[in-house]
Length: 347
Image 1 (cartoon, rainbow, N blue to C red):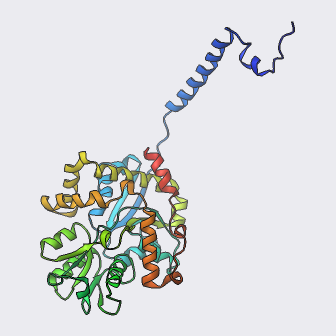
Image 2 (image 1 turned 90 degrees about the vertical axis):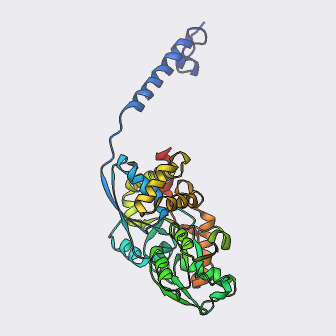
Image 3 (image 1 turned 180 degrees about the vertical axis):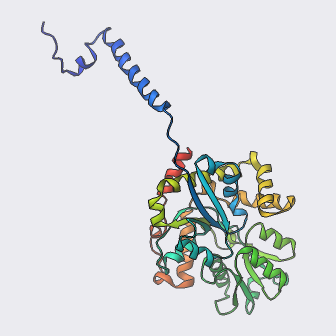
């Protein structure tokens, strides 16, 4: 009987029968061994890189503080220079001019840089839901009583000022019914309210919101209750820099995700509280209370909140009259490609 053609699929492994099985196992074993050897080859360390980062002072930075202290940035060969900003104008101008590479702040600042600012900026991750509350002087008991009063803000046409203006408008207190006073970041706004009672209202987040309550200022409600979901702080950068430095951006976000996971892990509550106390110069009880707010305010893995961002764009369209009242698609401002690859690095 003629042998089977050597090119047949059966002859690739040998003829059917007991003789074929060991040869097949041998080939598979050799392939697995080769793959294992490749997997065990050490990967070359990624080059050292320095990244300048600017943030507002506040407890929302817990993940960044942890990434520095716990060495998550260092393990990814990143030298991160973490700087504080006084206000959003300084932050936006500094990012656009190249004074630093990454900003962490309310991402509405990035939207304003893009529209109407014309800057090629991109939001690369989420961060938190703002954890803001509308605080007022103690004699104010209702939002309607803010007519004729002064609302203290960072900048009048971005982020948390727009939050406050929308909250007031929903209660019938329209722009023009009150005065706007530009003061700066949250730590400056609480000081302004404590030092001058004519500074009637402002949006405050922790730890400053907790300090405000302790000093006798009154909260009229949380943004999460008054407005619903809101994408607040996140990371953003100039798009050309991010595109030219994709590996650095991914490593940075991966380390930040590591820091956020560490900070929100209940097993790390005690050292995380101590870290907040040390970095923000808080006493132990205030640091403990602040941490409690963060557990529901900081986004898991610094994830981006698309419904919250839709809310942000809708507020800007309504309060600033941009885009003819209809917000553009989110990808005009957001690109999560680096974040998704960072997640895979962490996994």
